[in-house]
Every structure is written in C-alpha cells, then in structure tokens.
Image 1 (cartoon, rainbow, N blue to C red):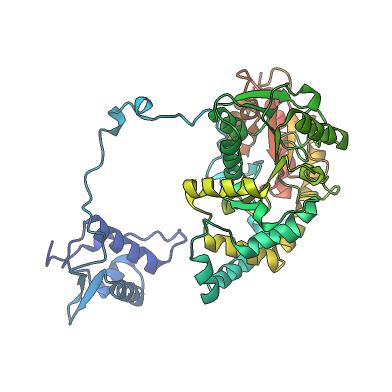
Image 2: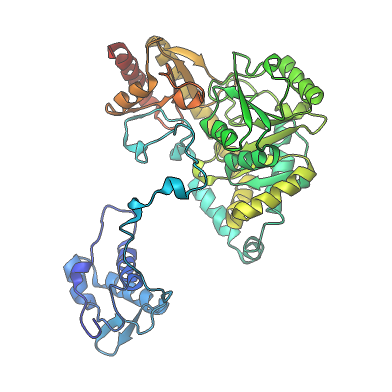
Length: 491
C-alpha cells in the first residue's frame, strides 16, 4: 500500500457514543496502523474529502490529523496532506493469524485447576436498561459526586503526589489512605489498629482470598455460614480444606454448632450475607471464647455498615477481640461504587507482613493513583457527604419497598436492622427462584435468585434477594407488584 491513498470508507463515526469525533478518527487510524492494515507511506484522505464524507467540520479532521502527527503515527507532506509515518510507534511485533483451532484443545486436561466451583451470580451488563432493576450492590450514579472524584483524581496527578504514587507500593500502601482507615474508618467500628496492622487490597474478595491462602491448606478445617456469599464458599472449597457449613438463624451463626476440630471460622456477624441477621452480644462472646478454647481464627467480613439509617450498626466483632484472633475485612467498594475495588485487611502485624508478601506475588499492589484519589476523597469530606445522601435516599426507598412487599403479600425473611440496601424474600415452598428470575427478566424485572448462596443444596431454592440501591423510588411498587404477580401465576 506504499504510496497508495487510503479509502475514506474505512472511517465510521458512532454519533450516539460517548467518544468525541476527533477521538474516533484517531482511534480508527491508530488501530489500522498497529494492526498492519495501513502500511508506512499510505496517503490519508485530505481533510476536506474526509470531512465531506463523514459530514463533519473540516477542522475536526485537521485537529485529529495534527494530534496523530505529534504522536508520530502520521506525517505531513508539503502540499500533499498526510501519510502514514515511515516508522510509526508500533511494537514491531508481527500480528499473526487468529488461533482458529483453539477449541479443539482439551483444556480440562491442560488446566491444573478448575475455578468455576460455585453457581455464578450473573448480572446483565446492560442492567440499567431494565425498568425494574432490584439488583444488590449496584450504585445509583445520581447520588455520587463525580465532580469531586474527578477533582481528587486531578490532585493525585499533581507533581508531588505523582512522584509518590508512581512508585512501587509492594512494601507499603498509600500513607494517607492507611491513616484515614486507622483514624476514621476503624474507630467508627470500635476497632483500634496501627498502620502495620493494615493491608490495602483489591476489594474485600482479594482480602478474603489472601486470608484463606494463609490459614488453610489440604487437611485444614474451616467453617462458614449457610447461606453465605458464593464467592466465599467457592474460595474455601478451592483451598482444599474440609468445610463445615452451619445453618444460620435469626441471630446469625450459632457457636454451639461449631465442630470440635476447626482452624478458621468465616462469618458476617454484624450483617449476615444475605439474610441481614445480626449476631447478638452473647453469641459474639461465645464465639470469641470458642476461638480461644479451640484455638481457631475468626475471619470477619464487615460490609455495608455505612448504610445505617434505621439504627446505629452494632460494633464489629473485631471490637471485642482482645487476643488478635479476629481478622477483619472491610471495603470501600460497597459504599462508593463496586468498580472501585479497594478494600483492606486488619490483622496482627506478623500476619500482615505475610499477607503483603503474598499480595506482591499475586498482583504486586493496588494501583497507586487509585489509592491516592480515594485518600483525597475520604480526607476532604466528600465520602461522608456521599454517605449522607445515600442514607437519606435509601431510607426513603426502604420505606416504600417494605410497604410494597407487605401489600403484595411477599414474605420478608431478612433485612438489616440498621438499614442496608436489600431484602431477603422467602417464596412459597414450591417456588424455584431460578425460574422466577429468568421469567421476570423478560418482563423487565431483575431480581437475584438465592440458590448461589446455598452451596450444599442442589434443589430448587424458594429464596431470592431484591436490592433497592439501583432502582428509582417511583418504580419500586410496580416492580414488586410484577414480581408478586409472576409468583402467583407460575402454575
């Protein structure tokens, strides 16, 4: 193609997308150059001709060309427009043909382990297009201060901050973020910890995985709740440990049901997942006494305590720990936005040293810029302001949804006493929540079947969860009515 002219037909503009017109032109050319579809020396359409073809301003094309020229992808010719640069900034690696025979390989024989061991909780990527999204864990962007977040991200890109966050955080974490966790977050849960007792993680699940790898191996004995989050049960099963699943009641996990031999107990005492049950003080004391007498570790997953609009949340179990046997896992992803993926682990300093070394082998460390941006967002008060808006709005939605569930005759099997963002619903004995979920999706209603929360039960599940963090108040009653109608008509 050297010396030839590139046809303007390779260009296409998506006028409904978020990317600007200049950006789309640049992306088209860069992609073609990097893939080898445009060879060095190929002449690009003139700015006038391409602008006419795309029905856009000529200056838009000119600015796109000028930016590409400054980056070295194309170069200007005197009175001849632009052509692909002789040595564009490519990797120099030839792009081969697609691996069309990959499906013929027996991957089950090649892979050392299989990680799909639990029923997946699948949420449609386009869930916002559904009129009644009762999905737990999704955010309402109208409640988040995006302007403040952008400002904090810009602050984190300042020269002094950039020099700090651009370094290697394997041996430490962002000082400002850790200090906030020590001075603000943990004291609010009744916990005192020093910086060397805290590890920043890529969300709570990353913290959980690290702890499991440190505590359990083939032949170990672990305990988890039933029901429990599928990611927790799957992680425990993959450890090779023998896992005892204990049914929870309205007060959470009963310590009297613990087996004699146990190395670690994984619990959500302040807000059981998914029922919302809270473990009372006498059970917490009994669990801590059992940990001391049977010599096991308690791993506490403490989530969503920030959404406390009905009553103050109970202190964390870690707040009553005097022996260092409780490892505490927290997260900012639930209270800010799920894509943030920032959590933290609190444990004795000796444990954190090992956890940090393991984290370094897995992913080195969470991105420095993300840590510093979150630190500014927390320290400047934006986080507290967002939480205040969320509490007020979720309180209103909670009231509306509780009333709608009662009016529709749906039985609330569990919800957080302090607030939270979801209801755990118990259907009739013969209900199959998986079938209900699929049927409602066709009607624009998104709920979550409870079956993934019961790892030992392969039969139909009559429980399901309905969240209200992602649905507008005006749509709650109609969505609940459609759910109740579908249950009534399932026969």
